[in-house]
Image (cartoon, rainbow, N blue to C red; front, side, top):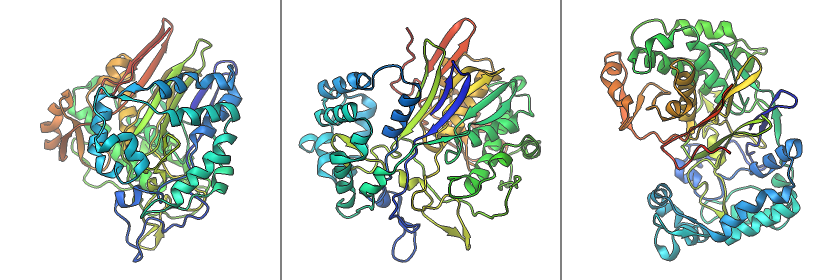
Length: 485
């Protein structure tokens, strides 16, 4: 959560990232021979469940900045849970796609596959158990979630998951805490682009991309220029190389956080972009450390199943918040009306590479790295844009390119979030099927890139704050809307 307080004119970031159970070991996602498990072998069941953080994060935010009574905040959600909502085509498609995994656990199957049949678009989906859980949270506050009957049921479901039990305990829930972090801000054009620090890799990687591109005139090239997208794509590849080696929970591993976004370092990395062809070799850089430690490159998987909201209220406060349970239906375990996360699979399944430790390896109490990139863009100390997106590790590219479209190409926020996606993390240029980005393929391939036409299901939500008022943009790829009153 990235929050700008209009009264104090201060920017605060709060981390509600999940934690690894105290009983977890670095080999949790390896078999008896030390070989990493397959992704869904690790995900489905209790093994992947981390200590939930979102209820504590929301309570912390309310304690700091809330104006309304705590109980009042739950009314609409309880009504929706009791009365139900209409299943959307996208939700119905997700259920059908994942039906075999949802069927593994009886409670989850009963909710999403009633009578053994997947819910269809237009069905009415009610969740009275969730309404009861929300009433407990509304009455007791976060203690009603992190201790007592709800906590016991969460632990029981995790530890008794058939075939793939986990190690989450009631102690893990009881000791969970939210972390306030220093914002990570990087200069881009006349702006400061600010977001969440480690273990989120979002602000650092978005910042690295933009910090490199600050040395090129993207505005002159234009949004339909393959040359512009070459710069964006290779800046992203360089940033992802640093991300894979250095970024993790800074409470557990020393990180060169300042060095990664140092202007001189980013200027040196930008020099690698001068040319007309794709970079042949992309390796991590050597940012300045205030200590001497080596890390190996990460091996982890992030799939796109996240939510984002951007809000500007009548007092001038600004919120950018991204939340996730990781994979589409988390661990596929359902307790008291809600799904349990599979956040622990955001850790590297390997602990070392060639004898060198991996920064994002699993450790007890550690928070896994994420790509969530809730962002507030500042101009002269005042917010001018709030933005973020779902999308797994592609979140970083979605947010960076939307900021470029708004700042360099003069698009309004709706046009910026609707723009066709071209994302490059590890060498292949993913181009959004059915969008103008498809037309970039021949020129990018001539530059030396492999391209792949595919669906890119972002969920960008942005609000531009101008002298004339607010302007909102909601991603047409999802059900969200821009709404003001």
